Amino acid sequence: MNIKLVAFGIAKDILQHRELPFTVQSDATVGDVKELLKTTYPKFKKLAKFSLAVEESYQSDDFVISEGQEVVIIPPVAGG
Amino acid sequence: MNNQSIDIQIKKTYLDSSSVEQFITNDEAGGIVLFIGTVRKFTQQKEVVRLEFEAYEPMAIKEMTKIAQHILDHFPAKKVAIHHRVGVLAIGGIAVIIGVSCPHRKDAFDACQYAIDTLKETVPIWKKEIFTDGEVWVAAHP
Image (tube, rainbow over the protein chains, first blue to last red):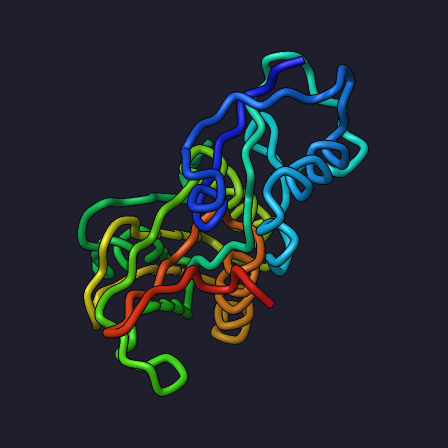
């Protein structure tokens, strides 16, 4: 199935896009997508950490993503 | 999501501490703490030219509101304001202002400390430091 990745901060530099369509297995979880991102873009392995957000909230690795859903990549935050 | 006790803003223009102070001032509060985070000229001996902030705004507003609500629920706070800047900031520019009013000063200090510490952990805002000889996304790498 296809999802829409949205990237901020260094994640945008790694993807070289703010938004990017991305193909994942049906019923992929947040954990699956994180692994696939690390395989597709090895620079994600070098980050201190990164999270995924769906529907404007952090989601744990077992969260199941739906077809067409917007998945936002959250690299280490640095506000303030 | 704002109510009369919470003021959350992400702004592309100058942050104004007097408007934060005005919002959190309250007849039942005897202590007001304002934290103002600014852009400093040196990071680990490297000279900073400017900072660039970006936010995932709808989620950042939600996470900042959660922080403010937590303070109202867990501290005897009367009002909480959190304003964060996005865009390009020069040295000395104001990146964040947090204000808390409480009946007594210790709670106001503690709540303000909680707010800035949690903001740096949870709110999806990123900053890029631009040096004279390069640039780096802060905290991205271990």
